[in-house]
Amino acid sequence: MTDPCIISCAITGSIHTPSMTPYLPITADEIARSAIDAAHAGATILHLHARNPANGRPSADPDDYMAFLPRIAAETDAIINITTGGSAIMTLADRLAPAMRAEPEMCSINMGSMNFAMYPAAARITEWKHDWEKPFLEGSEDLIFKNTPRDIAHVLDEMGAKRGARFEFECYEAGHLHMLHHFVQRGVVKPPFFVQFVLGVLGAMMAEPEHVMHLKATADRLFGKDYRFSVLGAGRQQMPLAAMSAAMGGHVRVGLEDSIWIERGRLATSNAEQVTRVRGIVEGIGRRVATPDEARAMLGLKGRDRVAFTR
Image (cartoon, rainbow, N blue to C red):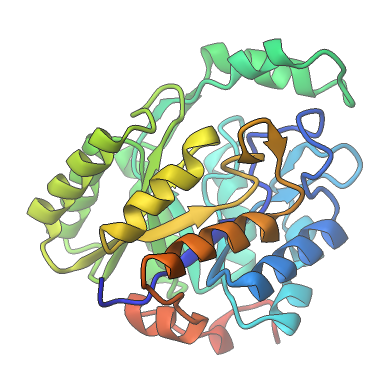
């Protein structure tokens, strides 16, 4: 409870589709504006994906990222964290291309392969904005997100060793913590580790308090004092698990990538709305929100002067 609390905000992601909510940022201008507003509301870290501006489909085109990254960097001092997960339908080379071009301070990395099932969401939508959405969601019934140990080692080398990025280690179940520990033992990654417990994806651990406790106990045993943890509760468990994490001395992640809701039955109108809500939770239990520079020091980041989208 002594650390200030890092609020990560995942702005658009690659899971939700435009037919699910009119508030999902799609174009470069929408992503930039939403990210800037989230930072002004208190987000310490901005976790970023891109979309095809014409139809909202997840994009791995570095040009789509470069259309909003410089603007966000110019108007905020937030830490910019670029996905290497992209979308499960992308190749590893495609997923890595934006981060390799931008050379950010942070990247996300999924610590294993897994089922990533989004198809139940298709049954809840009756009107589709774009032709790609329904088959994209329904196809996830037979979809594996691939990140083998060789894939992970490649990402760690390209983004960590060669470009100096630190990582948001996304762990969807306890085995992913052991995979991270394996790379620690290999000497490939060094502390401090920023571990994101990702709960609520069909194919991994559900968003339940017992799972948070189990993951925390496992990480304590594996990493001791060398790590900091954050909790991502997908869907309706976003705020309850954020409150739990903050009360345990951890950090929190919100954003329209993870949940399109602000409360039961009401869509969030922006990422900033979710950040404002979780900031109230964090401060309400007596913690202070970390500034970007405090988080840079806590996580050992290289600094924004060494990224490739501000020069």
